Structures are given as structure tokens and as C-alpha cells.
Length: 200
Image 1 (cartoon, one colour):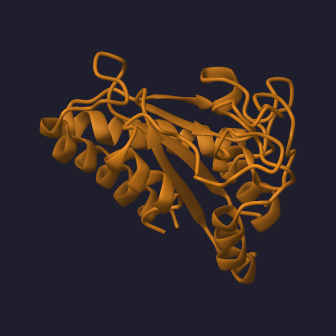
Image 2: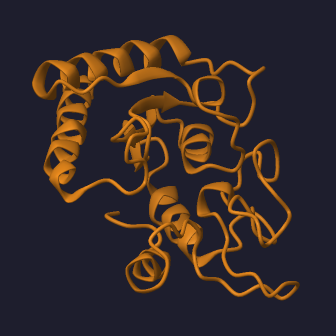
């Protein structure tokens, strides 16, 4: 899926370039939007989420309460057992991170496999583009975030290689990445995808 949050994306162009959530209306608040990457149905509502509709990490009223997260779920469930790899692209920080993201105290059974492949992707990116990406468990390397799509895919679809790649940069521009960095960022992502494809 090229874009999971179309209305939120349009809003970044028309109103607020830093907008994160979708544009769902809340029945309990005047605040708008749900963080779709807190809305998936595995460990929903746990660490790194909020019940406050005004929060940028608002989890929604229930797991899969949003049409966007349901769309990804419904597209992928028929592929259970067939999906060899899953990557979701975010920004920013230059990280290649893998489940579990919902807790720092729980280790994924495929940690070694995902870590080895993740480090190989990072080496490929550095060799081809010069960009340095850190690799590790998402909860430990970045922060805990329950109800995320990567954890849900890993748990539900039994997928071996599951990653969130936080693209450029490491903080000098942050979310306001200049246009000159678009093509280099795409090249980073492409090198990671090409390498991962050799494993599956």
C-alpha cells in the first residue's frame, strides 16, 4: 500500500505539515484523529499509547476502529502464512527496527533472524548511499508502541521478516525533510527492499 493515511496526508498539504493522525471525528472530544500505528489489534492500548483523543498517539476507541487500519488488515488476512516479509516506512531517525514494539521486556522468538537481516540491510544502505541506519528492537532502540502494524503482522500472519524503517534524517531536519533529500531517501529504502528480497 503506497499510503495508509490518505486524509491525514492531504491535511499535511493543506493545513498542517506536521499532522500525524488520520482525520476521524471523535464522539467524546472536539479533537480530531487517531494514530493509525496505535490502532492495530495486537497488544492494542498498551505502552506508548494514549486514551486522550487530543494526543498524537491516541489509540482510537477500539482496536481496528479506523477504516485505514481495517483496510490493511482485510487486505493481508487472506495472505496469512504466505507473507514472507513486511516493511512499513515511517520517518524519521534512520532506524531499521523490528518487533516486539509493545514492550521492552518481551523478546521476539525471531529476534536473531530479524536482527541479522536488518544489519545486512543497513550495511547495504551504507555501502550504496552512505547513510547510516541503526538496527534493533523497536521498543528498546526507539520507544515502546503498542498496537502497531508491524507487531500485528508478525503475530497474526506468522511473517519471518518484519520491519519498520524510519527514513531520513537523524534530526537536523526531522519531519521537515528538504526536497533535496527525497531521492537519496528513496534510494535508502530501495536498497533495503532489494536486499530483503534476496532472502525470501
